[in-house]
Image (tube, rainbow, N blue to C red; front, side, top):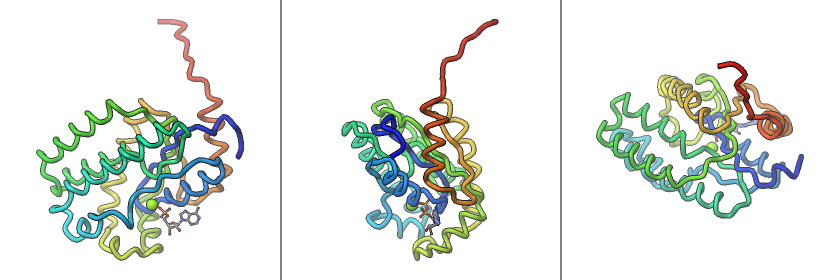
Length: 214
Ligand SMILES: Nc1ncnc2c1ncn2[C@@H]1O[C@H](COP(=O)(O)OP(=O)(O)O)[C@@H](O)[C@H]1O
Ligand SMILES: [Mg+2]
């Protein structure tokens, strides 16, 4: 534990599939003494069907994940103990938008999803900080292949490149609302480095700005 000031912090970990979110969430949680809220994978009832027939399952998959992440998000807020969330509720819109743009989600379903998310987000306290693990699509594909989950065997470089483009837009947008620390994760770093970056960039940063001249 580096500092008591981090004992109730709510940290969201963002990034492409295979970036290293779950691994970092685990080590960062241990390092800071925070509970970790993992992305639902083994117990995700839609995941295998989704990868077999993306178009058919894109909408139910998004609704399912929105609900699961909302529950995690609420738990972190109401427990008041902080926590590390492995993928944020905000970046699900990255997937939804990419699916719609690729013709894999009906535009009407997409609008319903976004409206539902926006209504829910009015009831959500934001994480204190988001750590964005910036990983090139080719590296993410290597890591996906390395961990060899059967259900992910159909993920292509093209799919990851489209997702990466959406992630870039997402990070630009969300950083207007939530402090984002972007880290180059093409090569892994020690958890201590990440904890230090949070402390220096977020906790010790001054957000006071004074306008001296209009
Ligand atoms: N810090 C790390 N050091 C070594 N290998 C890692 C590290 N982080 C992730 N990996 C490996 O990279 C792959 C993807 O990591 P994972 O944490 O499952 O990514 P994500 O949760 O973002 O999909 C896994 O095979 C994992 O073991
Ligand atoms: Mg994971």
